[in-house]
Image 1: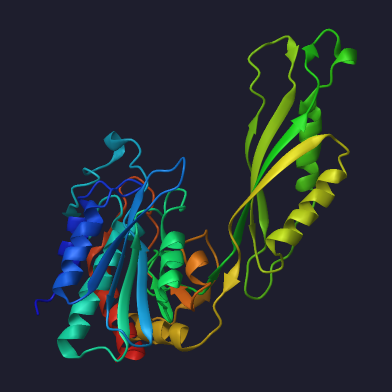
Image 2: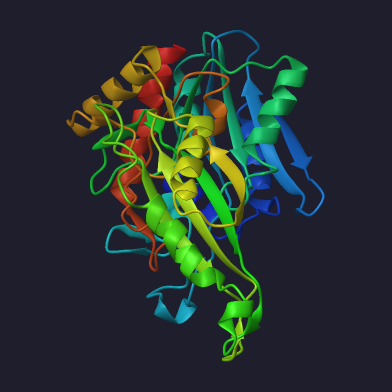
Length: 380
């Protein structure tokens, strides 16, 4: 069985311009590599009204428990202004010991390390259990037709994952600093404050919604939501957009709108967080409508065999004792946690989503050894 070079595979993946959603070409490359390793691969395409069809890949080697899964995504965010890159963003150039390209950090190199680690593990032994990969082309976008749909498909088939590592770039500055064992949830609010349109010279027969919108937003941010706890940083509410849509200088608008997002810890459920925000908005005493959207609940994976295996593998290969953290944004771990214990560990995330995204070539090799070590601790 030929060993897979994680750096060469990283370069091959980066050269696919899989700006979200991935059209499937990068997934086809992965399927080809995994089939050669003996995996049974299923390409799963999901779509909903108003969304683009998105291909996903589920591959499994073995049929017994435990089923250890590597999970990740091949879609990437847009490159931004190409002229500001020092290298072409999809050429996967290695310069000064670093691999440059969109997706190098988030997270094509981690996916390459997944597969390279499996090839090394299988050269020595067959798994006592199963190894699987769940790779989506829809994580950086709406995440509607990706991991969530694959998990629904798995449940319908009676397919079970027992442990999962997601390869998100979890380390702030150096490989081995941090394992994500949970995440805060994400609640979106789309707020509309109602007024009465009229002429600015006759305000007594109109009602300006803008001061009322300002009052509501002030009430939302008047005091902190919580102080955090030993496991999670404080919840935070951020106003991300204010819009009136009024291009006239002499018309009082009929409505004013704002959008906000709350990253909330396990002090709240989505339901009681909404109730707290409604209580705050009521203090302003204004006429408003609001729509809610929850893109993920907070979760924590308790310490156990999975976190221990990742911790030990990271310490062995890097000499560092990684922090078990819940910081940062959301990932597809928010869906996987409903099926099995899940942690996140990948490369350094300092340049993810940025111009000149890059990772150290040496780190890709070390990450491959870490993933191999996790396999040895779970399915050997």
